[in-house]
Length: 414
Picture 1 (cartoon, rainbow, N blue to C red):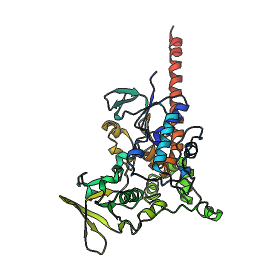
Picture 2: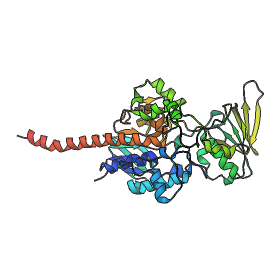
Picture 3: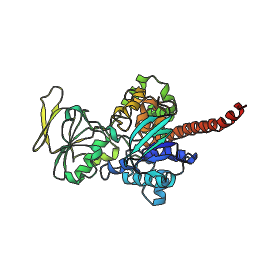
């Protein structure tokens, strides 16, 4: 019998949710290319900003951790104070998929529309199929943020950091990176290694690195700022320990916390790779840009100073991602119109279900409901268990009603 559930996306969230559904005997259809974003949209040599203990995918037993994978593969690992190479994390995700979600179909879903009591999916090869429930676990790739003053620069002269994987093509070029968060500095380090001349421009007064790499913390440090999955601090402890209570806050409070907590910040280990090698232009705004035959002339401004002009061969946007449901083009316009929203994200129930019955959202799309934890790999545990439990309950209820129907019809007969 065909599956009644589809998971769209084969990254950390999609794989974790599918693993929990498989364990419940639901055998969902899973579409996507395993760990594609992590494999193809990260600069060469990148390392995880998250600690090792906070980078596990979720399966019901909780035993297939990143630590366990590294032990069995004889790869270097540390719960904290050690930067995990992105390639190690990708290999872990691929091993997780082979073991817990072997049914991944690498075709892409191009269109989702609502039909009858379920959904019709169109795949990139033209196939169509119907399911009763859909989990959107598509990651952040569709939400690359492009500052308005740079919107008209061609892709020949400008790239988002997610499109800068092979940095060798920038050897000898003058590259301007916009932003001072992890994606910006990771790209800067990779570009410098590739032989590019790199300059970072940012609105902040300085590049502010996350503290780390100091090993075990004392009890006094823990008391002042307890260790959490997303770094030390009591506020972080609250949002990571009790995501189930985050929806109780008013919309404005949730939006403020998500927008302002755990913002862009480079990892501690990247500092030595770029300081002294990368020029930084702090406290500057991008006012405009003009593309020429020789590159891009970028107009920079700051309070109390004259406008500056910077000529680059290429501009890289380390400007992160802005989740916006309207940019999820895979959903049919009429389906998008049915989804209630908080800011630019879907408003979700306590089980991650949207206002459209049977349509669930995981990952960054759920952050405005369950908090900033959902933007990180460590949020997969909470999401996977809740979504799998809800779908299991719904499918069990439907099966029970279906089995009762023939009996009721027989009783009604004379």
